[in-house]
Image 1 (cartoon, rainbow, N blue to C red):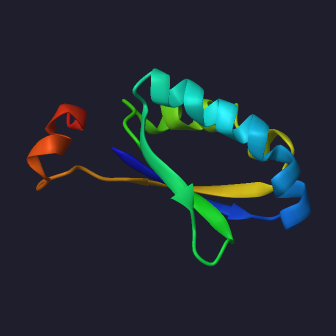
Image 2 (cartoon, rainbow, N blue to C red; image 1 turned 90 degrees about the vertical axis):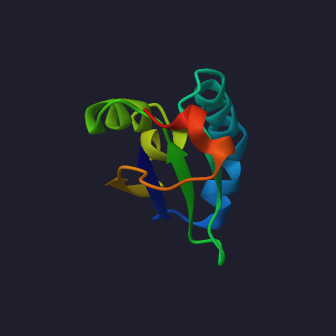
Length: 95
């Protein structure tokens, strides 16, 4: 399991212009059951994605498709963790 932290390096105008393409990217990985939840940080300095991937390399391949990455308007921090306690409804996401 991975937490992907995005920190915007571009202006909010640049980010806003790419949001529709970024949402298409997100939708693709929700359909593939890789993304569990995502959203903007508060204040709006970046975003957070909870990702169910097999490896950090897979996460990096996924990030490479994000329009925010392609247009160099965000930096990414990948945090790997093993869920040891979780709500029953979360169980299908745990390897």
